[in-house]
Amino acid sequence: MPTAIVSPSSRSGSYIDKTLGTVSIASYQKVSAVLNFTDATARLPLSAVSLQTDKIAALTQHAIAILTDRCMAEAGFAELSSSVEWNWNGEENRTFGQWNVAAAKKYGFLPNPTRAIPTVDTGSQTPAYLATLPNCAEKALAPIRDDLVFLQDTRNIDYEIYSAAYDATLASADGRAALAERAACLHKNRIEVDPRTYGPVDGYLRQSQIVQIHAATIYAQCSIKTGTIRVLFDIDAKYQAAYMAKNASAIAKLNVRRIEIEKKMTTIVDGALV
Image (cartoon, rainbow, N blue to C red):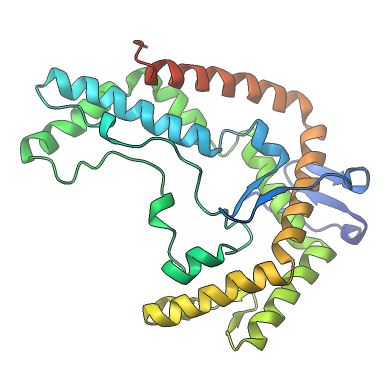
């Protein structure tokens, strides 16, 4: 993430990011995040224009699989992409820690495997298939290579705003207070807390799965019970909105590119040649 400088006026809602400059959230108090507490996902101002959305991620993976299938079919192998369920609602949004209690009770600190981004399983294919795949994939992805590079470029304005808003949220007085309240909840439930992250210490990852599930469940419960998740995502939403307004021209250009990429990937998925 870009290096950020905490402004002396952070408590009043102003923040200075080394890359994007100063913003104030004083006029964005009505902006908030839309949280889905069942799936532990969040819709924020950037969600409408960002390249880093669940929809684009799944669409891109689907397009990659179809292009690869075409090449592999020419080499005499069966297509695999049609056997994958490509609808994807996204993984738990752990930007500010775990908050999916049901998933924590089942998987501990591990991501929910049923919510992983769809991919084609090539591990069970024949040695001949696996030997052909690398060169075929390299050739197949040529039509969208520039798009893939662009999607992963951390210099894009959406990534810079995401990073700046995240840093600003953690630097804010209300954000720090919310983190401290969750940490107190963890302490009360005898979960050892890392003072740097306000979450469970990494040592739990080396414990048994039973211990991990217990610690992760308390973590998720404290995130909800203390209101920490709501507070942090709402602050994050305000800073995202402020930085988006400050960089409106760059956001508009990014959105045009996003629409172009989304249209191209959709065309591939719908079966038309690139």
